[in-house]
Length: 221
Image (tube, rainbow, N blue to C red):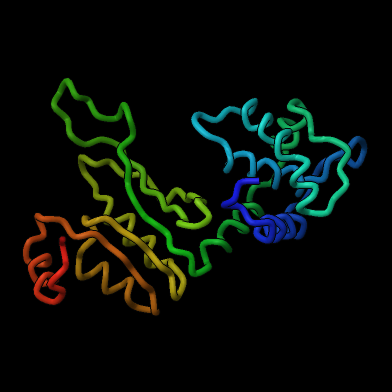
């Protein structure tokens, strides 16, 4: 098992799935527990590299299957087959699964919020510099990602999506941001309700950088 995934964390995740997930499959031929399959599936994604496919994920499931049995103290005859895995995944009710992910985001884990331009949305022949972008957050420890929204860079700004999301964050949330979001309005809002933030400073933010350099002589290297 990957060292980044502790046995205690895996057991907690599996136990939450046991409580939250509803298995809508017929009892006839139900050979694999849903919570076990989904736990093994997620572990296999998190420990995979490069481009993912269902075949690659399943091969990784076979690789980690015995270790998960040991971790959960379960006696499972064999790993689910590739064909049956697809059938199980197609019938999963993902709403309860998403509520479990939301619990993770309600913790005091640091999350990073960022925007990325979508490849192919910028017409370089017409000298376009902006296109369709996504904004997402990612947990520093769990690596769990959450899509926050889309925006058209030719008309809209990432700042609006980030600001709206921050309004929904719980008390004591911890956020890292890039230099674009160094605005008094946004950072004041984060600071409310005991939230914490860490943000970058760039050379083009000269006044702010100079002020910090006066306060901290070693600032900026």
